[in-house]
Every structure is written in structure tokens, then in C-alpha cells.
Image (cartoon, rainbow, N blue to C red; front, side, top):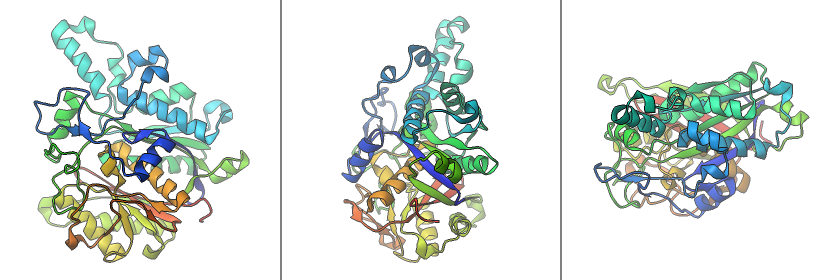
Length: 406
């Protein structure tokens, strides 16, 4: 994958709108987890979330789009605008046929769907929006982004929960390998509505605590579950030759990817995450010692934290590499989380600093992790490994590097 580069970044997250605001808040350790405001969470046992602050869709999108799209899609459309602008991609090659869109989603437009179902049952079928036919669909972000920008290249959607953001980037690389010049990719999600909340709650993995500083504590002895959030990141990936020909600024390189799927826990065979990590490193042509930092999945669920820590220890050794979980500031963003971590990794490499894991005060010593906590850690960084794990066994691993690393 060494011929694929990242030239555009678009971020919309609880930590801020745009790359600059997000990165500033992340380095400052400013978490934005609080009680849900988008609906009344009082009937539910879990009530905290990471909400995107200050987002006014009408300031960015035409009114006709507002009536036919879910908030999740509105966030994704704006993030894609920013990614293309950051990449400086003005005139699209071949009338857009050279640029594709591959996104990840685990839910679709739940808020839009809930509203129209309420109209159906309370007012009748004549009051259901025609846009319900696609606004709820998990592939809607890819479709709306391609329509908005006239992108007619190979496109698609990946559905693998939290692992989806990395799986989408890998699929984008496959499209580049087959001849596509560029692909918009990543994940942006948001299910902060009663219907979405009920679905999230059904897993039993969300924290029930009311204190935002004690609710999401990955790798902590006091871990109690996770806090969900909304948002994510969209990236523009290009073939290296295409980016060079148009003089694009390169944020980083994609060196290797691998995925695996865990067997059912009742089989007692354990996680296959270490297999995926080794495979990703092998495809990147790297050894474990070449990795300068790991952006961990950080489930916040004790059993899942143990499995991830064991995999990292198996590959890198006890305390063998710095580990961080900046999503403690945003909550877990489903398919949006991993693509945001890729952005975090690229910015960390650029600035020579590892962003912190916040709120973790009692890291479990049995995990033997070198967890970066409380404050950023200056470091010379050239290569980062991003881990993402979806519910029910999805594992994905991506290796990214500085623009000059081959």
C-alpha cells in the first residue's frame, strides 16, 4: 500500500469543527462528554454522549438537502467538503469518473427514520416523507457525497461497526490499486436519538455512570463501559503518482492493513487481534520495533480491554510501545471513530506529539501498557498503528506513516 497517500482531511467531532479546532482541543485534553441534549435521556440507564458542538447544518448546506437528510449525513457532507478543500482538489479528473466514495456506517439515518416512523403510526402513511426511502439507509452517506460533488468513480459502503472506518480506507486503497485516481473515504456517524439509543443500549456495554470523567475509562481498573458519540472524519486518498502530478500536499502514507474476525467467546479460542496486527505490519514491510505509537481501540469494557492489551503485549512486549486512546475525549463514534484516529495519528506524526488518554487514573497494571495519560507526550514519530474493533468480533488494523517514509 506504499503507493497510496492521504491528501485531504475533514473532521467534525465532539472536540471541534475542522481539523484545527479538533486538534487543539485534543492536545489540550478537552473532553466533550456530557448528558445528552438531543433528546430526553431520563428514561434510559445510560445518559452521557459526545455531541458535536455548534454545528449549524443550514450554514453549510442548501435547504433542500436539510429536508432529505439525517443529521449524520449532514455531518458527513460538511466533512467531505472540508476534506476536498484541504486537498485542493478543484477540477475533478474525467468529469468525476476518476474519484470514488467509500464510507463506513453501522446505523444509517436513525433520527430521520424514527421521525418518519412516528409520522406513520401517529398520522398515517400520507405523512411519511418520500426521502425516508433512502435517508435511513446505511449507504446514504456515500450516495449523498457522490451526488454533491459529482463523483462517479467506484464507490461503496462498509458495515463492520467500530472497525468500519479502517475497513473503508482499505477498500479505498483497493479502488486506487485498480486504477481510480482518488477516493473520499472514512466514516461519520450519529445515532443520538431514542431509537438509536435503544439499539446502543441493547448491547449492555454502555456506562451507566453520570460523571463524565468516570464513565469511559479504557484500560482502567475502574472501567465500566463506554460513552457513545457522533461525528468522525472523511479523508481523501490518492495514488502517489496522481497526487504528485497535481502537486498535492501529502499528510501521510498508508503502509499496511489487515483484518480478522474473532471466534464466538463460548469457543474459548480468544481474540485474533494479534494476528491482524502482525499481518498489517507484514504487509507494510515493518517489524514491531518500527511502530512509534499505537492508537488503541480502547473499548472501556473490561473483557475487551484485556483482550486488546494482551494482543498489544504479545506483539510489542510489555510496555514496548506508547499507547493512547484520544477517543476518551469524544466517546466512541462507531464507524466514525477509526477514521478520526487516523487523522489523530497523522497530526501526531506531523507535530511530534502523542495526544493523551484522559480521565484514566488507575491504569490496570496487569495490562502492562505504556499508556499516555493526562498530558501530550513529545516524541519522534514516523509510523503509527491504528486499532479498531467492532462489536461481535470485527478487528481492523491500519499502519500509517509520515509522508517521507516508504
